[in-house]
Image: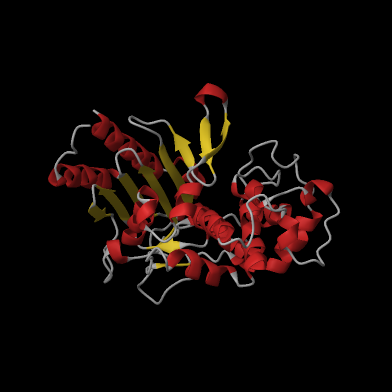
Length: 353
C-alpha cells in the first residue's frame, strides 16, 4: 500500500473543498494514521467559539449511536437484537396489528420494520408548516399510541424502508430493557466509555452550539428539539468528538466497546441488485478501493453532517455545516454530503494506489 500524501497536501485539499462549499459554517475533519487534520470556513463571521469547537446537530447520524447502544446492551445480556419490540414496551400497550407484534429490535435498526418514514399524524403539520419541527411536541406517550394504531406497510423483515418512526422506537425500547431513560443510557454506556465529552442530546449554553439561519441569512434557526424521536435524531457533537467516534469504529480493539463496535459493522442486507448497496446494522456500506467504506449522513432544519470511514486504510472523515433554511428541500443531495463522500472515496483510492 502506498503511503498517504503529506499533511500539508491534505490540508490544502480540505481547504479547497471548504472554500467550494456555500454555507455559513463548514468543518471538514480527517483522521488517518493516528493524525487529525481539521479545516474550517464559511461565509458567516466566526463566533467567539471557534468553528471546530462548536457542537453540530447530527440529525439522522444519531441512529448510529442508538444502534451502538443496542449492541452494547445486548453484550451486557439485557436484551438481544432479535427480541420483539413489544417485549420492551409497557405491558399495558395493546398492539392490535399482528405485523406490529412481529417487529424486532433488529428490524428497527435495519429499517426493515415495515413502518413508514414518519408517523402519519406528523404529515399534516409538515405540509402546513414545512419549516417547523413537529417532533418537539411529540412525547413518548404519543409515539407509543401512534405505533399501536399504525398498521405496518409490509411484514417485518420483508422490505427496506428508511424510517425515523422505527428508529425512534428504539428509545423507549432500550429504556424499557435497561430500566433507565434513553439519554442517561446513551451517556453511561456509549458516550462516556468512548470519551465523547463534547457530545450530547440537548442544547448547550449560549455559544456552545452551531446555529443555522432562515432564508434571510440572518435570523437563526432554533435548536432542533426531537422530542420522543431522540434516538432518531437528537445527537449533537463537536468535530473532535466526531473524529473520536470514527476512530473507535476504525480501531474497536482499543476501546471499552470492542464487541459492539465490531457488531455494528457486520453486513445485514443488500438491496438494489448488483448496483445496489449493502447495509450493516446501522451504516451504509459501499465498495471502495482496498475494501468497503461505511458512512451515514444527517440533517436538521439548520444543519447537516456526514461521518464515514474506510477501515482498510484507517481513514475517517467528519463533515458538518450550518445552512440557510432555503436549502432544506435539497438536503438529500446537499453539496456537503456529496463532497464529503467523494473526498473519503478519494482518500481510500489514494491509499490503495
